[in-house]
Image 1 (cartoon, rainbow, N blue to C red):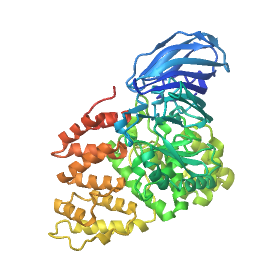
Image 2 (image 1 turned 120 degrees about the vertical axis):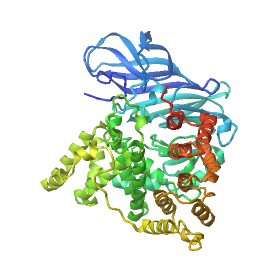
Image 3 (image 1 turned 60 degrees about the horizontal axis):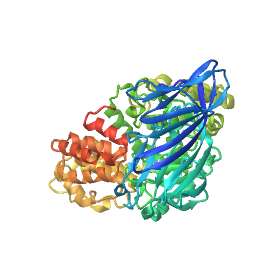
Image 4 (image 1 turned 30 degrees about the vertical axis):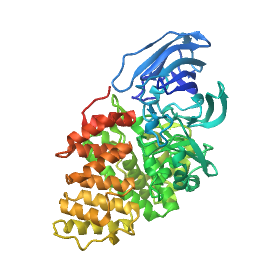
Length: 616
């Protein structure tokens, strides 16, 4: 039986095979208006109704073969919206195929869609919209079975005002002018089956530039050249993924650089990865996020978690493949250094949730819990560390990498659970390498790894080459913290550091007891950290300053959290500013005044963090 605690739809009776969207984008009313036609199949006998997930949608009518059907909504739930109950004319037997056409529109409260005023864009002339459906926000974009357990194809016709352009997580198959060039109709099709959370739409003043044989970068015109240069190595990530796994299945791999309020580093929408503009560092130092999103083309998009309790199958695997790609594009020392940095982020998140919090288990129980409320590094980094440990246990990459490819071949196009993954791991290792590998796997404490909260039970060892200089420098500063002068330090200390070494240096300083302000002032004077453009370094420096209650950093924190909306940065900085002696009022005032800037998902989470608001 299919199980997903985050859906209200009757997935044990009905499954969606295709969705056709016909929508008009209305920036004046901030709505998407039109129809969604669902192709469905019954998977049980005596099915008398279809239940779909919805949240903040206005449904006007439902019909089957142009015959109106009765429908009603269930009561609103705290986390999951309302079920749309559609009464069928007659009960269906198993394997009956049929279509439902639903006329509806989104509302301003639809959490999947952010509508931006021209002033919120780079160009300041045209409005903009983008969607973010992961984890369970597709139900506020269209009535659907909003669960990763069901994979479907989709097509769309999107009508927008000229001169705006529409892009989707699909292949564009045509466009045509309408109403004397007042409107333009964009047509799309996604032939590879995907879960509902990967349906994505963006509309704005968008221009594209080819950056590879299957890749175009799309942005507002003002940043197109910078983005094209920053992401010019994208093809390397895709081809390396193909070498490790299977041929790339999606045709196009385009990138869309979104406006600053995009709440994530990237989103792996197929054919059109969404990325944050905070990656535009001017030196390609942050583009490894694209390696992560490209790795999702196999892990998550092809092989998909069956529900959000198994989210680590998407993200832990993707981080593991990302670091395999980085190890080949750069070197193994570089990818190991990435793992060292991420271990600290994992520890921070587990400390935030509490080491005994069951939501820090790799496979948490999410009945009655909004998946957004448990978003953290756990599925990413605890999942990565489990896979890294398994690779070591079975004898290294020589044995594990052929299994990775077989795993994608076995489960590509399917939605699976952790048990499915584990059973195939055992089957593959025993079949190809004998009982010795099965015995090795039996030594793993699976219950602790999968079900216990807190940090991983095993601390993996990674190459420390890049970390050594960072650790040594941080120790010097820690020992010198109470000096009257800091003449032993100079800009040369970090002039040869790569970005990630600066990140680790600041992470190590953050782990020390709070520095006196004299040390903070000296460090900034010597290394000029307050003026750094790179968002990862900027974030760490501001965290370090806030941890010492260094109030001259307050206006710089406010500037950073109001010029971009990436949750990785804004949520911790708001929490820390709110937690300082004299910054709490400033944090709340800044957020309240800028709440409309943030994506609805980010605004909800920040409000919970510092205003103690609950979801509405």
